Image (cartoon, rainbow, N blue to C red; front, side):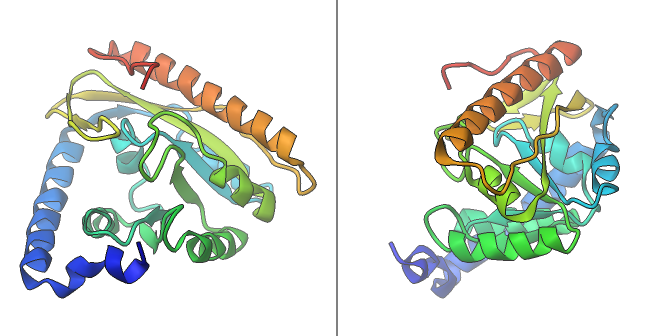
Length: 236
């Protein structure tokens, strides 16, 4: 499907109205739930520490449990990638309301251009957040895109996970976790990873598997610290 076909909703007035309405509702709900969310983030300042070494930071996370991470880092000028689809437009508007800048693209549509834009931003000192199992899964399986970006830019990859004690689980491909009012969250960051410029394909795959396993370990620990009512299913 071409980019123009993928974004056909833009030429449908009714669909545009739906996107606008859902976006406004999403912004309101995000702010309402985020405001009541009690977050513990003991290593929140790790991005600042890593940046002092002259490298950018790429925050790696899963799709489904990432609400507390995005809320915690709101207003920090972090960049993210969103798709050209109607759902991507809704997400873009919600994220921009939180102070994020969005590159439009995905691994299948516009991704190369978005990757170039992200690389330029990272080299310019801007941090980027990447849901590594996107854009459509399989959920909780890391893709190598963030490692390629780290290889091109010399940026650190910083794994991050968030546990919630109470949440609604959306029936979507990523089993998205939406925090209930007055819920508690714990955001953890893990061991930073650097990717050498001369890394070969075999080593890249080893690093991808390491990142995937490390994110799982962080998620299990974050869930444990809040007494999560429903831990992630390892089988996806």
